[in-house]
Image (cartoon, rainbow, N blue to C red; front, side, top):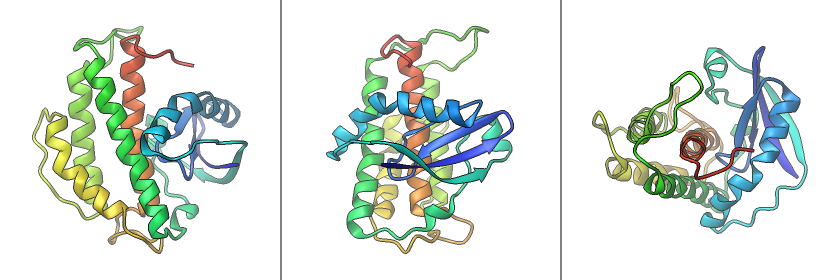
Length: 217
């Protein structure tokens, strides 16, 4: 069984696997979001494999439904669940950190194999490869502050610029936790892992789909 958290606004629902950071998808309805999450199990499997974590998701079971906000409506996985306050043993934390690190590795592999110019959307929109990379790294600079990690990320950053920041984030995520936020107004480690991994994989899969490296379900 895979425990799933739903995050809903009138026009969008996210379905996110609680214990599989980064395995999260959205669609217009709860049913469609759950179906899309299931469809992406095959695309998430390489992350688990890279982390050395056996991946046998089984049945998707909703354990919590959250009200989203303007960020959710915009397409950002934004709500912190009550389940995110569950304690993490050292082994749990290590597993979670390994999955986040694997998501970063998968993203790097996708970037390395993608063309600089990506296929545009139906209205001609969408960032090209290097701008997606810069967006991901710059966003992680902001995310890391929610874990007490403060480092300056240059504009137009590349993956090499993220190395020190990501190492510091992993050091926090590997620590056993009582489930509470790392600092006042910060993020609980479970949510932080989900947010980091979701964002990088969302863009990895976007790059694959817009460079014909992967087939979108």
